[in-house]
Image (cartoon, rainbow, N blue to C red; front, side):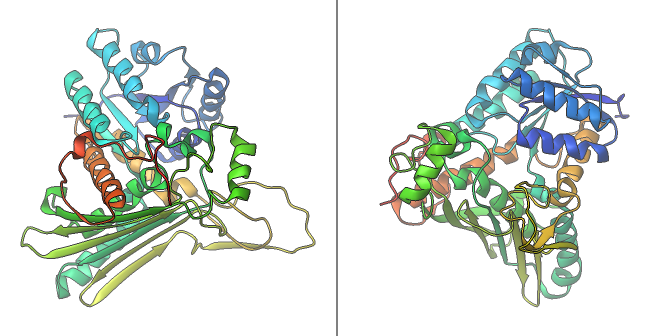
Length: 415
């Protein structure tokens, strides 16, 4: 199918992640940011103004999602709002399309696809019901370091010595930007749901032979642990309450701030493969740290987002203001600091959005779809089940699609 005209993109949500996407749009061709909807009108207008300032589209703020879908200027929607509003947002989009008020080429949804497997399956159903192309926004599988590292490891290492057998992925920082992320009922869990969705998919991607589908790997067992290591300590629980209010009470209703999981796979030949994933909201370093490893019989690859090409040093005699202008989740303004000159590119947002736009314009499903997002969510729920049971679980465990973690029900205790 020939490429369509330049697509108009509308964003649902106007917070941190929407602005990351908008910043990446300077590297995207074939689409302009045309609209933003948020329950916070002022925030929507601010995000739209950012798009205009960056010259990536004459964006406006909309009164509703349905009004944005109904506008002929909007061809595709990027869902980047809160996890607890995923289904409601998607239902409003679907109703507007099904009623004939609007027409869309595609819908892309930010990670995680939903709070649990049941909700994720509903997202898939709604996309299928209205017949739109669907893209799952997992930026780390588009990160230049991950993509190029995988390419070379398979081309040079696996070709000579055999396929890789172990992939490790970790994402760590000192905690989220917004109150709802800390609330298990709204977010769907804690750091496991928030960040391990990145790690399990990036590691699976590294282990998958280029050119083969995700079905070439079969998950067999999942073993996970979760803990609240830092933020349930009284002094840090008070800090959260002071910043976000009584709704974030980690002395009474904590979510996990550390999680680790091992996913055992088999490939098409029955070869055992392992994914190790670690995530943390209790890591205090220069800023967000993403690390990946891929190990094979006679080779390995490694990537770390804090091993930057640029560093700045500030002496103790300088008075500095707090910010995140050096690296995401920045924790310091003194000493030798890593600097990521282009975070959207380094983390994969540039390439991710180029791919989604190009796929939608060609009338093709992207490399990552809602079905991939569903499978990631099912793996996360299996990890929560394993952590609650205190043992490994065969995959898929019974009751997986109905399971809601204790953290997400507000009933989890780390003790």
